[in-house]
Image (cartoon, rainbow, N blue to C red):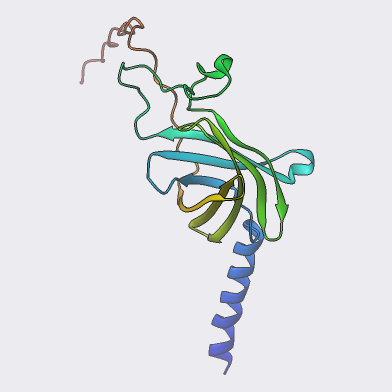
Length: 174
């Protein structure tokens, strides 16, 4: 009896620790979009870190056809069309509500804003449900990606190449 009880207790304690690290519904982490074209990092933000915010940290194709970093070219505000997509905030101030985080998400590919609900399906899946005008709705499942993975927007191809530093001389082996 004792040999059965100890592993069961250990399993319970370990799963309780995992639940404390990522509360149910907490969307924090880095997520690969369903189509695999972007990674979005979601973090707690706002007063008392009660909200969730998300920004683009990686693109499968970071450069456009001209070899320039992708920008927010479909933004309805012409002043924002030169913003780089990498680093662009897509979700800002999502509020916890009914086991999910709800608010609005910006779709840079269309230049449109949707009402969104974001919730953890599991430790490795995030459910994204969005609607425009409450009738045009869709959903996706994003998968967990390594948190440390981020991409820096590449420099423009017009930039001068970096000069190579001369190699340091190695001491002769004795």
